[in-house]
Amino acid sequence: MGCGEAISAPILGLFSNRHNGVRNTLFVCYMLCVVANCCYLLAKAMPLAARIPLVVISRFTLGMGTGNRGIGQSYVSSVSTLKDRRKAISLLSGGVSIGLSLGPGMQTVINQFPDARFGFWIFELDINNLNIVFAIAVNLICLVILLSLLDEKEESADESELQVFEDCGKFQIDKLAIAICIASRIDRVFISVNFKSIGFLYSEVMFGFTEKETLLVNSDLAAISSMFVVGVYFVCAFTDFLERIGDRFIIICALVVVYIYHLLTMPWPFLPGHLNCENLNSTADAQLHSWCLMTHPINMYLYFVGYVVVNGLALPFFDNYISIMFTKLLGPGKHGKMQGFNHSAGCWAKIIGPLVFTYMFDSFGPQPNWALELAFLTALLFCWVLFYNRMSPRRPELQIECGSRLQRSVLWLRNLSTSF
Image (cartoon, rainbow, N blue to C red):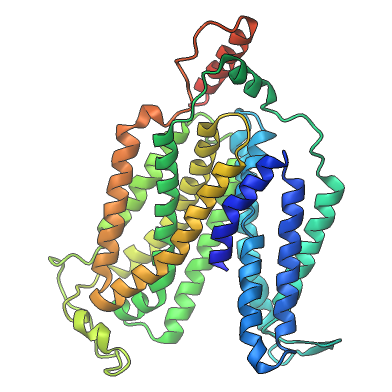
């Protein structure tokens, strides 16, 4: 699924730019999702030899259909002004986070009925695939909304701004600033992937939890963090609480919080005590024994409270304002291609990250994972501080040569400067 999403994201962005809109592209994406989920349901009715290939094809196709977040952000940035860009992007990101929470939530509800089984035509439905039916229903609803409510004939909000820069010929994308934004997104994905990849095993080894305790604690942490995430996007989308604070300042503050958390939860060699490795299975967990006795414990409450702060507050703010900054740096015009590449970079990070972090944790313990995260965060903080002035869409090189259009462009830049 991840590979399909990573491959399709830039292709969908280019397709969106070429067809001057997102309606056709989104239609293709939703149809791909419907077809992929139907194939997944059909797999259970197929011969055993055909099931695995059909499931793999359906997951890859579903990934291709879900690579539409970039074009969604592209469209939102084109129909919003710089003044309301924060709220528009926050609404989109909030919708994505709610959707990501509804999926596991629906499966949790379905799991309460383990004996439920339904037969429909050649399909056999049970707790393992009922959530797929829910996903198909959601995609069909989205198709109806897309075809009936989305009107791309309306003038884009930034069309006048685009015309100014086309006439003046002076707006140039800062490639370094764009690269820093993409690198920031990759590191944000790596941080989340690190938690998800080793979180359960880390809790067992570091704090001596049983499997049941690990499942309960990590599920509660995920639920609490999800509530905070929704709250963050609600604040960004529906209030003016952060209107006077600059985007760059919020991003740097979020990076500092994540950096401090990794510093405080790093199992430094000078910490007192040793882990209790008696609960590890000498055969199944033999690889963990090689580093367990040499790893020093950290404070459990510091880790879990920090987990909620980082995943529920710092990372959502960071992710949201990186998206906002990225659209501003791209300027007025078509963002489909660049948004697609940005989304694709995050998808490849989701694919590569679990392989790297899981291998390092199994072989060497948590220290290499934390050290790698600290290295990434140090490099990012250095870039954001060193190139602070370049991480802004202001363009002072715009010269007085465009007559009355210059006044409009200067006004645009002046309005922009008041938002920082």
